Amino acid sequence: MPNAAPFLNDDFLLKTEWSRLLYNSYAKPQPIYDYHCHLPPDQIAANRQFENLTQIWLAGDHYKWRAMRSAGVNEDLITGDSTSDYDKFLAYCCVVPSLLRNPLHHWSHLELRRYFGIDLLINEANAPEIWKRANAELAKPALTTHGILTSNRVAVVCTTDDPADTLEHHIAIARSGLTTRVYPTFRADKLMTVGAPAVFNAWADTLAARADMDVNSLAALLEAIDKRHAFFHSLGGRLSDHGLENLPDVDCTRIEAEAIFSNVRAGRVATTEQIAKWIWFVMIYLGQLDAQRGWTKQLHLGPLRNNNSRLLKRLGADAGVDSIGDFPQARGLSRYLDALDRDEQLPKVVLYNINPSDNYVFATMAGNFQDGITPGKIQFGSGWWFLDQKEGMEWQINALSQLGLLSRFVGMLTDSRSFLSYPRHEYFRRILCNLIGADVEAGLIPADEASLGKLVRDICHDNAAAYFGLEIGRF
Image (cartoon, rainbow, N blue to C red; front, top):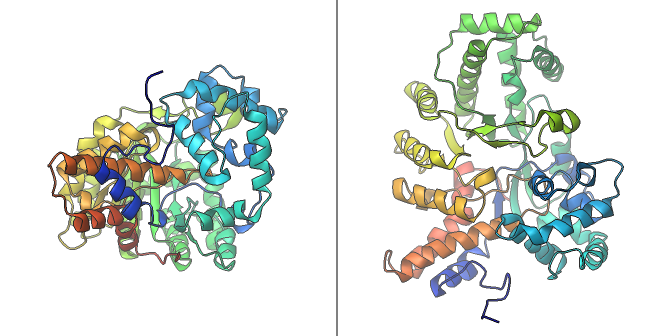
């Protein structure tokens, strides 16, 4: 049999001596700064202890759901209510051997190794032992939600929260004594839904109740949004986030926005043109709020969501039926950033693209609006969603290196709903160190351990800590 390196050995993804040095001495020891994720705050507040591996490993993980569907697994064994947790787990174990060269193959094995000390290959034959051993570990305090955050040395978690959320769980977390600092992120997706009056109006009514005021005019809506933004700020929130197909290349006057608001509150569906104008108007307002309070705005642009109407009807959103979109990005994004910058109301911004063809667009757009005061004020964000795998991360790092400053990069995030996703930071760090180490050994950058070590530390933790300005947990 030909020679082969052991699967997932200590040098996994690290091809050179410099790569191994940089990872082991400078990347691996850094705490995790998870500035964007979808972890449920209620589970952190309750310090949830999961009953079995399916509940923590498969529930809500649409990456794994997509893979199982592609392998021909019946939906009942993926998301069905009548199927046992063990049967769902077994179905996934049967699929894993067919995931070779898919990042899920690496991630799934890393998760078992790092959390449970299980180095078995995931397959049907090993499934009973994996189930038994993992569930025994899950019964221990080290694998409650607090235990996971602490053992992974997660300094900061920024969840994704609706402006109308009570944030009661964040309040409870702050009082819990958890070392990890957990902050809300202001994500006003439902503010954009003027094309669906029932959704928008129900949300606006909830927002009104949270802000303790009537929302019967555009002025009142904006005041309520401001009050909620201030409430997030009072709990330590310093980030907003938006998931959009693209930023519209339009203008919208206040009079036009008032008419759109009044029509939607009266139950009339906004036209496509009106939706674009409304998004433009409220995005400008939200950018101004972020700038006034010193926040960072995140723009996640480009997905085509909910493609499968059958599964959307059965499961709702986030069912794993989204894909990369091919929307025009440059003009609308330029118009938006320029409109805020022109009035000196441009906050710090992190730009994420889901379409790799937009890598150079976003990397060069970030360079247009740096202010010469805040290092890396406009960030070209890490590989996101379908791009948070080895090739996608390398593309993003290379584009940023060629067109911007890798040294100012705020690094990786999980963007995950799973508490077992922190090996993705290890994955990113190994990829980063491998790229840098290869350049050193090729004579492309100086073999200066001090400066290279600082570069790696900065990208893995210190840049994010300085950029976002949040109080961090100390490990």
